[in-house]
Length: 110
Ligand SMILES: [Zn+2]
Ligand SMILES: [Zn+2]
Image (cartoon, rainbow, N blue to C red):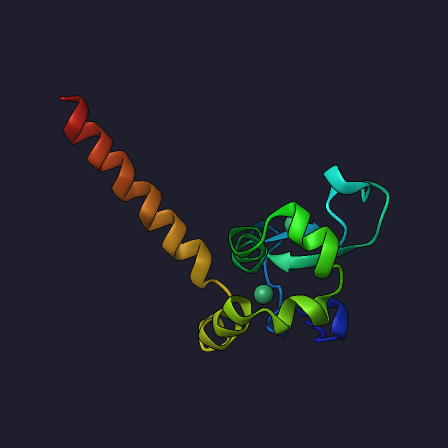
């Protein structure tokens, strides 16, 4: 296992780990003309944070680089928080959340 820069999440700087945990972020949102633009590979959890904190309009206007995204107050706090977690953190929490919501759903359905 090599640890070149290519295998680090551009947002949080942690190793990307399993491809199941990662997705590509369009620096210019596809709906704003970025379909053929630059993409960066990020953890799903980091990627989701970007879209939770910003609308595509805001991204297209002010946050088309990783550096700008990292300066966003909410994302900055998120990076500090997530940098203490294991790369697999998200996967585990998602799995247990999925299991839990399935259980809740079963309980409700019956
Ligand atoms: Zn990340
Ligand atoms: Zn994205």
